[in-house]
Image 1 (cartoon, rainbow, N blue to C red):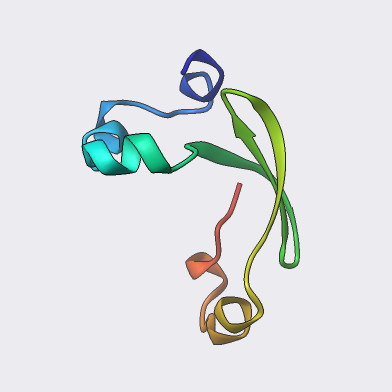
Image 2 (cartoon, rainbow, N blue to C red):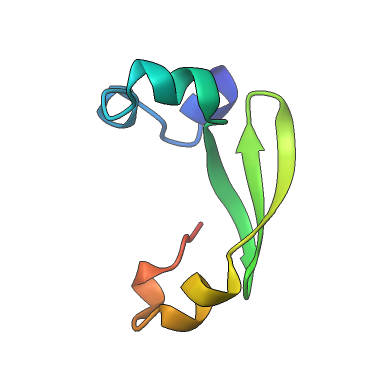
Length: 68
């Protein structure tokens, strides 16, 4: 995980993952955002992501959004 470690991923975050999470989820860090569109850096490279409409509209405070 050297790519995302350079962006602050550390044991604090790693310890919150279950073994099932580690098998089934793709870990990444948001590196760019524009409204509900995100670019996420993973060990496999950059991935385009999108915040679901319901989550995006339910956000009360901008700090609740996935941010860079």
